[in-house]
Image (tube, rainbow, N blue to C red):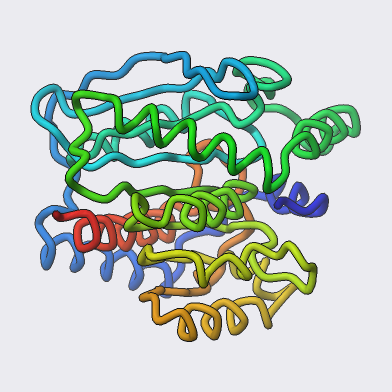
Length: 291
């Protein structure tokens, strides 16, 4: 779900603006012009901390949505640093684009959020050990239980338009959780996106990519360049699996990025490439969750 040496990427600093990233930023601006819905509106939103009953206990989460009307629901799976202000801000930004968004604490079985100290020093052995211990409490079975409970919560909310498919998105270890969600709730999940997802295609018998035949969702898979360097065959395995399942999937390696480049509070946050990935996600959601 998230490899131990991924922490090394989080500890590095973002790359400076180059001609390449400037061109990519220009491309993202062009996407906004071509698809007006990509531009984040200033629509009023309502957000609150919520408690969700699951078969495994009580999960804390954050739910935010436009102030009026019914909208497609989206479930966000955070990275190993868990539910925190950066992810609440990202959920609010997505809500401003017309979605009812739930971002959850994946480690609720162990402790409520925050599950990592703000600006935690991931080079500190104690911090690394604590985060990996949390990570190791989860697996495909716990993810399946949680996915069903969180989707059920969304479908019970007045702000969610249940006539439309749901979206789900995940970061780092949240990538496999997205796959589990899409595979176990194929009739509800219409769009799915992963950002520097960890271990999506492995040689293990429980590799997430083996779930693809059970899915019905359209996908965006945004791969960190550093992850691609470590495992260059993974993207091809994913492309082949989606092609065989006849599911649309945009699979791209984002040049110059390090594992963890998308969350705004990451030490390796790459603004231009993160904005490009966010724009591609909005295109996907707009297409697949329109109704």
